[in-house]
Amino acid sequence: MHDRYHPTYVLTPHDDGSWVRATLLSQHRVAGVWRVTVAYTVNGSTFWRGMPARECRPVDNRSISANNAGMSQRIIRAGEGEVLGSVDGCRDRFLIDSKDWGGRLAVVEHLLAPHSIAAPMHRHTKEDEFSLILEGQVWYHAAGEELTAAVGDLVFKPRGEWHTFWNAADQPARVLEIISPGGLEEAFRFIDTAAPDVDIGPVIEPYGCEGDMEATLPIMERHGLTFG
Image (cartoon, rainbow, N blue to C red; front, side):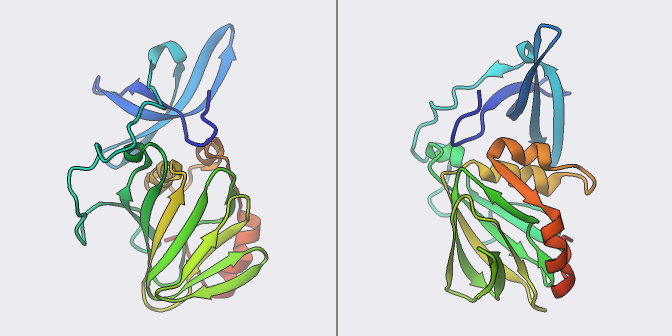
């Protein structure tokens, strides 16, 4: 049921009776009844729900027009856009959602506080990422080596490659992240609003992602980093 390149969405009822678009995380059959696990965000809070599949409504995940129907303005001004995440870690400024552009791409600005790491060591199998450094310096671990990128540098993170990135400096850093194809930005939203003790494995798994915290800890200790 999952799309090969993008997450599958469904409409699910929220507590107030409204219908919201949710990411389908899993589906399984229990005693002859199909059940699903979904996740969605409302007013900055993330909800994970399990329910009978019949309680959800389908969404045509391939019918989203590849135009700018979802964007109400030609220019996204500085300071505009939804920003989520810890001010002491890596915040995400959401600029272009893949759902508004036929799933072709997503654009997110990462706002890295001093001595913060964006994510555990991880890899994704469905998309490539291109990181343009806008401010400060950003350190990357990719393909088994550590690299440093400065303002104006473009970093390529191909699918299937283990990587992570961080800001080891005393000043903040900003990175413009282009994700192709899009869809992974929805996982960012869930992670940015999740409680610190939430297991994010079930959230990133439908996106073809996996993490390695054991490989991350030495990097954090060596550079004095925190998730915020």
